[in-house]
Amino acid sequence: MAVPKRNLASRIHVWARREEAVAQISAAGLADFASTDLREVTADATLIILATPVPFMAAIAEQLATFSLQPGVLVTDVGSVKATVVEQAGSTLRAAGVEFIGSHPMAGSEQAGLEAARSDLFDGAACIITPQDDTDRAQLSRLELWWSALGCRVSKLSPGAHDEAIGRISHLPHIAASVLTLAALKNDPALAKLAGQGFRDSTRVAAGDPELWLGILKENRDAILHPLRDLQEELGRVLAILENMNDEHVLKFLQDAKGLRDSCQHP
Image (cartoon, rainbow, N blue to C red):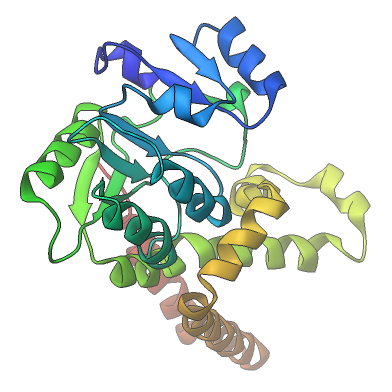
């Protein structure tokens, strides 16, 4: 929805795995052409964006590599994990002479499907691009301009550095929200009826698609384990502070957390 709003493409083609999804896309007027035929959808494309769960991207790249794509076509993705995508899908495409550069717009919510689409989805969102040492500079500039034109704040990281960073600021919070939900409600689910906005805000991402998140946690497992141990350490520290009930230490704990959280605010 953001692309036509900003007039960033002359035509938009969408591929979907299911005919029902194609019908929904067409009925909503979200594409000039939609189909389950990947070859037909990508035949005239100059920019291809892989927007599937990470585990499916390698297989799609293998198909694309066999097609007669347009000269100079650029392929990117919007996956939450980059090292495996670049290593598998990216290597397959580049071996076929097709430039691939990973992307990760930090946009969206725990909701999924067309119902969650918004034309302002990327406004002010961070987008991380993951070029390699031999990435084509002209294509890299083109991709940066694309995400900037959609309203994103663009940064560049290596695929490995991306996965470590996102493991801390996206994947760890999802686990933490899930743990918080279980700790609060597992023994008495009826307490959910009493929950206020604070609880809902703190646990919102735990409502994400479990199958999608299984793939993410599996693909980025190594980068998640270290911050997860840091979380375990912090929980142990606050438990000890409260057991001893040291006002000064409790206040310092809360002040440190508030200061770091305040630094997350963007203009």
